[in-house]
Every structure is written in C-alpha cells, then in structure tokens.
Image 1 (cartoon, rainbow, N blue to C red):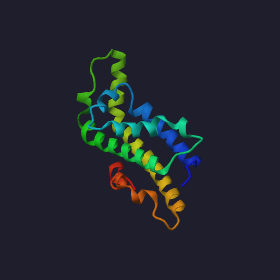
Image 2: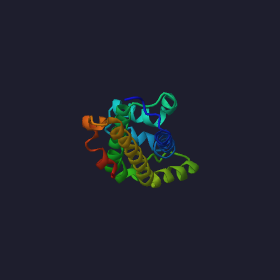
Image 3: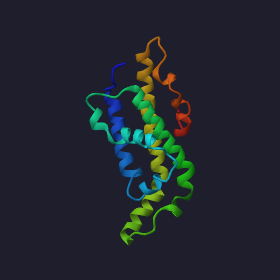
Amino acid sequence: MDRIKDAHVIRLIEQIGVHYKTNISNRFLRPLMLQLQIDKPTWDRIEFLTEKLELFRYQGFHLDELYLSIAACARFVDLSRSNLIPNLKNKISTTSSASDKILRDMAANNFPHNLDVFADLLNSLLTAILDIDKYSAGKKPPVFSQMPEMINVSSMLGGL
C-alpha cells in the first residue's frame, strides 16, 4: 500500500503530538513516565507518533508504522493508568519553587483526564486508519489483522 497522506489522519497525528507534549510529557511528569517499565523501542515508537510529524507530513505514513506507534502509545496509556496514576501525587517531585508547585499540582491533578484525552485521540486515529486499511485491502486481509501487536490495543485504550 502507498503511504497514508490523508488530511484527517495528519490532523489527528498533529493533535496527538501537541496534546502529548503539552499535557502528558511535560517537565513535571516526564521523570515519572521514564520510571514506567517501557523499553526503548516502545519509547521510540511513541516519539515517532508524537514528535516526528514534520518528517512524514508530505511523504506520508506507512500503515504498519502507524499501527506499531498506536500500540506503543496504548501500552503507555495502560501502564500509566495502572502504575502511575494511583500514586501520582505521592511520586511527583516536591523539590520545586512555590510557583512551580502550582504548575506541578495542576499537572498531577489533570494527568488522568489528559491521559483519557490522549487515549481518545489515539482511538480516533486508530478508527481512521482501520477504515483506510480495510478499504485499501480490498479482498486481501488488512494490515492490522496480520499484526499481533494490535490484539489488545482497543482494550488498553478503553475504546472501540
């Protein structure tokens, strides 16, 4: 299949990247995120989706690359919900200035909601590329059906 250059998909990837950088991977939460049991290839896949849009905006994305990145992000969401959120307020650094304390507390308090927004955006992207994949496959099996990484993605994101 040719690369995906669909404007809706590109906009969703852009939204995902902006939301992730602004609300998820900020200076208060990033140190805690790095403590999650996530390997380097998974972090690389998350970065691919959240930070590399400009590299692919015009040449497009391969379906398998997008699926692997969504699966990596879903794993991050799942691990964050189970390992990070329950004790987030106790884990977040308390060694900051008074002005940083307000921002730090806001980041911690809003993280569960922001993680849900991230998961919703990922679900929207997944739905969009599933439609493209199924349409493009014709009578052949779609790409996602040949990728074991995709088996639990929907349940990890809490949707579909």
